[in-house]
Image (tube, rainbow over all chains, first blue to last red; front, top):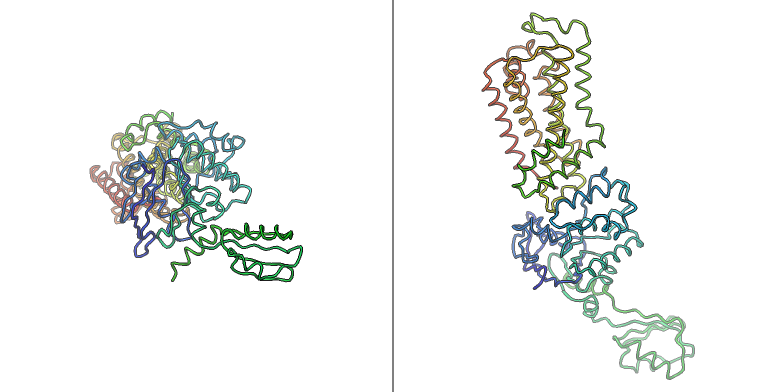
Length: 301
Length: 260
């Protein structure tokens, strides 16, 4: 049974449709990503799943619960980290943790959790004094304090420097390794690619695609692109003769080739047969980035 | 002392699925935040200083004919005492809620098992105890140290102070329900506070106000409380006025309340 099941979710604010028609299901133990441009309806979707907003249409089930009607029970078993949710500046880290721990039936050990999140040294620091990365780690700690079965993380790494971002990704992987299902909202491709088992790509309130990051990348149909300088001159025609090659462009001594997913394999095999070394070889895969642009732009027409 | 009061208050909120333990933790949080925000204590220090000044000025303790045979200190004691609940309800509560709202703290609470209403309940509980202690301190200082007359009907005074505080807390709940910044909260709360200060006789003793002003004052929360203290007019009427404000504030703030 899916942990989170969203079916034809619809939500409007006045005349503005924030979420038009969103459906997806999150399976136990996976890191499921919701990816989409700003204003696509990601946060509203998450707010409906977290019980903060009542949907105008469709249904949402989390661990079999209705998030709005069973809100109290939901928050015992689902940890939520919200975008833009603050804490009083003058509370200390361990005070915040103990405060939240007291709300749950079966709270996690505060000191252990702080250690796991690298905040043990900051236990006595006031919230105001924490860096952006530390605040985010505390937000994760608070999402985990109730020993949840599911955590929802909204724009977890927005505003973090690359180092803190990588650290945070490591934490998310740890959380999943502990058997917690993760719903991750992001607009960073790299984050989605690195962390998510599956992704729902949302654009203008609708689901454009649900797939693995690699699966989404393949959908764009874009193959590979490679660049190199051959150690010995080679004719364009010889390269174009390979069925895997679509086009050859020269920039001085440099060749730029595009073709299907087997392009690199075919070309390197040819060069090896001819005993040509490909100097400065670079290969570009169709990425999630391309998929994102292609899939969200496709709807514009 | 505070902790005891808190324990007693907890079961009343258990119905809201807020555990006694969670409520205690929230009360602890508010107490810590209060201690770290020393500005809060101005709400008690200011009236105490005012009372001490009145108490040491010679001549404030002699009965005066135009104050109905009471001394200046007798007249001002309840007025000064009223400053505490008025400041707590009209500025303390709204600005605390506004800053929680401004920082999205309420949003954070709303995804925990504690209903954000629990946090509000804990805040009101802490502020109520704070205001009660402030009033008690000022009244004891005024009567025991400076020798002001104790009111004849203690029951009327206690019930009117309690109802008066409830009424202004309910009214203060309106800015607390909607203000998104400290200045917005104060902009709404302070005029109401000044109005109450005025009709509680802080600027001009009630006895020296024109008759029409005295009549208006009966319909202002702390004007009614002062009348109940001095035994002017029908007690039931004053209590009804206070209950009316409580209902008005309660209904309006419940309708307007927003967590974000």
